[in-house]
Structures are given as structure tokens and as C-alpha cells.
Image 1 (tube, rainbow, N blue to C red):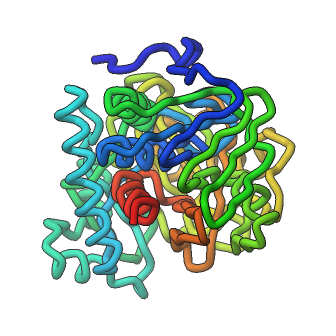
Image 2: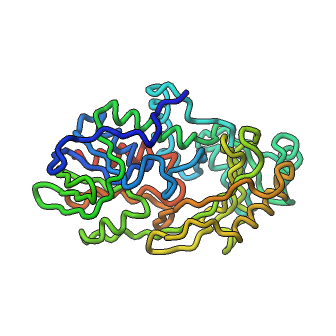
Image 3: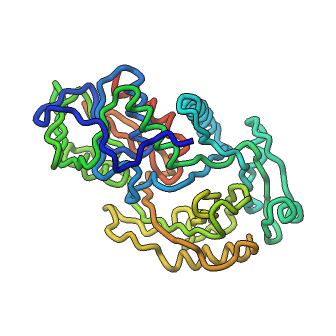
Length: 368
């Protein structure tokens, strides 16, 4: 069921171009900005959400069909996911749309990882799966050794549909969404914060929340806020055929090395087939990468992995593309208040699933 208008259709625009007074201005309408603006709107705050491109553009970190949803063996991450999961379920009910797809997550790891035991202790009904069962049940061909397990309660979230549902919910709760509003300057004083844009004039507000992903550092630097993150351009490839891939989400930690990052992962992408990438394999930079070209070496590595692990999907990818990671130390999320500016860098390559929870926390920081 569709819950959103086409992204090219104009969003709600405030009338006065020269001076718009809001309680909160959110800069950046990726999934984190959308979730934050929605939480602010639900709390009754007069909120503007500014996006330099269009909603669901393909230049940042939130575009595409799907993102994995999995349980974490660390209690603090598990608690955050439980919080986010309940809020995603609320959004599903509000929008009358299915977002969480519980196809399960199959994990293959080396002998040194003991994640299965930790997950079971946290109440996750995960089960050990040997190589023969993995091939019979899922068509996954495993090498000898290691630990493999399957969690039937995880899966993926329909990312584009989730962003549509968040945008629609924002507007239902009175949020003003403005596309094509590139921010040129943030200026704060003891009384307010002024957000200047190239095409839509200036906005005054009690607080500004920066959820601009890879662009956040440049917005915050003039305010003497040093955001300790790097940006990388990650390559993604798609195999199989649209709507024809019936496998769980797959995480293969045994492929981790200096070239391929923390390991290869794969998940269904309904409109394209099987989405495959190597986590944290992109070249690191302090600035937003100018090139959007996929890395041919990574595509070759992903193609080889599919041939080895999922031979029924072997062959050249039907498409490859890039997205951006904005990464902090230990893949943490940086959520803080700096005067009248809220820092919302909930990124690090695994944040999409948590957006409803981090959005609530950023809204709480803004309204305190």
C-alpha cells in the first residue's frame, strides 16, 4: 500500500520567505531527520524540516529499497533496538503499511565469536545451523569451520517505504517540509538560532537539529563544533532478479579483512534482487566524496562471494551503486546539545533501523 506522494510533488511551504519563526528547524531529511521531525511534531513543536535535495534522493545514506534489521549481542544495542522496534510498529499502524519484513537473519562467523550464546541469553530465539542445513534450507554454501546461526525474528525494513511513511506522518503532525533548501549558514545566540538557506531565505528557531549525515561536519565547524567522524563511499551490487530472491538476510563475518572491511552482507531488495555489500569497505575521507562511481574492485569481490555462497544467483550484477557512510569511533552515534544546536549524527553504517529511537532522543534534547 502506498502512503506517500511522488517526491517531485511540492511539499508544504511556509508563506513568509524573509522570516519564519519556528520552535525547531531540522537540517537534513534522511531517515534520521524525518524521524526527529516527526517526534517534534508529535510533541506539538512548530517544526521545519529542510532538505538540500529532494526527499529520498540518492546522494546520501537513506535511499534504496531495504536495510537490515538484526538483534545485537551487546545489551545496550539490544535495548535501543527494542525501543526503535516498538516505534516502527507504531508507524506501521499509523500509516497502515508493512515495513518490517521478518525473513530472518543468517550469520556465519569464525570460531572466536560467541554471539549466538549472547543472543540467546538476551531472549533471541536464535539457533545453530550447520553447513548441510544452511544449504538445504537457504541455499547458502558455507566453507568448513566457524559458527553459523539463524535468527527467525529479524530481517529487513523497507527503507524507501519507511521514509515515505515518516514524511507523511511529519505532515500529519504539522511539520513544514521544504525540499531544495540548501543551508549556507547556522548562527546561534543566547536567544535563538538562525538558519540561512540559498533559495528559501532565513529561518529563526529556538533550536536547530543537524541530521545532515556526511554534510554535518561542514555545517557545525563554523560553530566550533568538531564532529569526530569520517565519510566513506560504499559500493553496493545487486544480483538475481526483482522479486525473485527468497533468502534471509546474510551476514558473513569470515570475509572480513583490510580490503573488504568488516564482512560481506546481503539482503533482499524487492525491486532489484539481492543487495550485496562489504561493510566499511569504502575509502575514508574527511569530506563528502565527489565521485559517485562504484568501486570496481569491490564489485568483483562481491560477485565472487555470491558465486561461492549463493551459486544459484551467480553471474554479473544487474546493477551497482554507491551510498555514504558517516562513521564515528566504535560505530557509535553522536547525539548531543551544543547551545541551541543539536548534533544528530546517528550514522556509522548501521543506524537506519534505530532512527525512530534516535529521533525521539534528539527531539528530547531539543525540547528540554
